[in-house]
Length: 257
Image 1: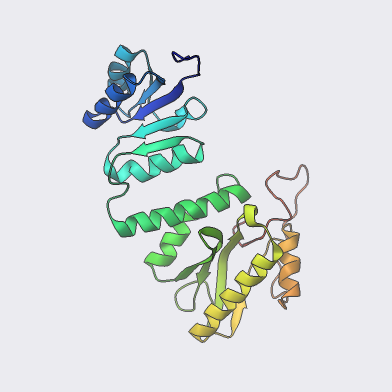
Image 2: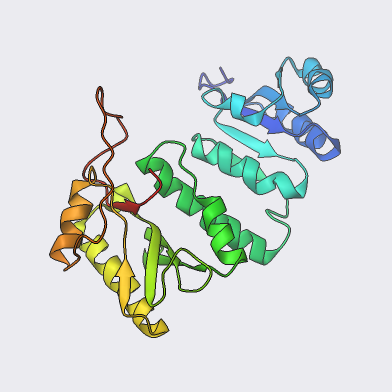
């Protein structure tokens, strides 16, 4: 408890190097802050630095989830974004040493990938399409389209274009499309599918191919209403308890299952 009876704010420092130790000293002197932990991949160093302040030592910043209210991130620059993202996703406020990332373009890409991960994780825990997005971009297999409303990302789609990708000649192939469960409205899927069709039209292709997992019944029925017809059917059968993440009302199109 703090001097006025209020509970102390629980904090930690990730990175016990030169800058990290400055942050640890500063936090230890703030009367309403409890220094809960010090994190460093060099666990011996974390223990040495934490001991004088009565704090715990940790090897991995992800161990802090549920134990702290905020963290100061003082790891090497190239790790800033990944560490901060993990902490933010676990509900922790963060203070990050400058710069957040090493280049502006890297910052934009990583910010987008973090937004995509938030959507996919809300649909299927642990699902991350970052590698697919980077492969499509790096090998020029297609593009990643966004559906935005103001500052909100409503959804995104990884689309293959004809050439060396999975898209056949004269067609677009939607590798993955998802609407954020927070913004789950059929009209958003309808608008996004129309935008994908417009993207194809601009490229001069006359056909759009979209995979759909039939358990996502709302997405399937929306495609039918938009004029899509079954081209190829693959059946997967199961027996037993349904996975709790497979919500039939999620608006997602994918061929990864």
